[in-house]
Amino acid sequence: MLAYRHQFHAGNFADVFKHSLLTRLLILLARKNKPFWYLDTHAGIGLYDLSHPWARRLAEYEDGIERLWKRKDIPQLFAPYMEAVRAENPDGKLRFYPGSPRIARRFLRPADREVLTELNKDDFATLKELFEGDRQVLAHHIDGYQGLKAYLPPTERRGLVLVDSSFDRAGEFARLTEGLAEGHRRWATGVYALWYPLMEPSAMHAFERGVLATGIRKILQLELSVLPEGWTVSLRGCGLLVVNPPFGFDAEAKPMLEWLRPVLSEAGEGGMRIRWLVGEGEGS
Ligand SMILES: C[S@@+](CC[C@H](N)C(=O)[O-])C[C@H]1O[C@@H](n2cnc3c(N)ncnc32)[C@H](O)[C@@H]1O
Image (cartoon, rainbow, N blue to C red; front, top):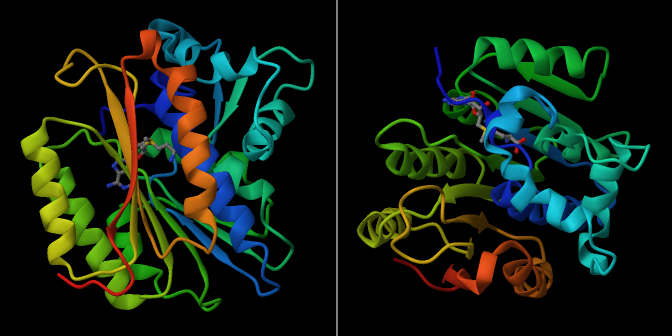
């Protein structure tokens, strides 16, 4: 039994960060004529009711998607993301929030495919029902890290893997790094987007050292924090490592983070970072 339920956190600042960047990755992948494949290793339930008592309990979406929802000055780079949220709320009131599987589905063309893995039994059942009858989406009730071994490389030979772990077990940074290494061994040209929470500096340095030690190149690192460094009461910030980002992604991501930071960070306490953890030509 897994304790983490994303329903408590849906639409929070971390979701806004991850999902708005995810839309750009998918749009850039869809620019080429050839089909792509999308794997979501930690899929969740796919669609969240923000009026559900679990979502209401912490009301994290109030400091996340709701802040964007209320604004009239959303930059164009966020338009596809906001359209994905708006599509779930046709009456103009923010009640439903799409998870990554639902957002990604909007960007599939007829020949593209989506594979979802979710380990929580109840969440998997909800997810499966959401995509029932959709021939482009396959959901599996297995460990996402096993999925990286089982489903890679895809026949399409191009696409994106999102690893969005709930980080509710010790040793998850190491598991994430090993998962990336496993996936990359099987499919070196795939795009990988790995979400992670910002923790104490020693944990973050160890994570970066571990990733560098894999020898994998072309890794873009994006981070956004909304609370001051040293804050430990709740999630203070998060990051995304993007391996093999499609051309142009880094140029889009920078202004997006610059805009998001003051919108999502109360009293301007947070920060942002975008850099190549490893460039194309560098090795470890
Ligand atoms: C952060 S949530 C995912 C949110 C989703 N990716 C989204 O953006 O809408 C993490 C999910 O991973 C699931 N999970 C935890 N450990 C897992 C594992 N080893 N394999 C697959 N799913 C797992 C949890 O049940 C939870 O639903």
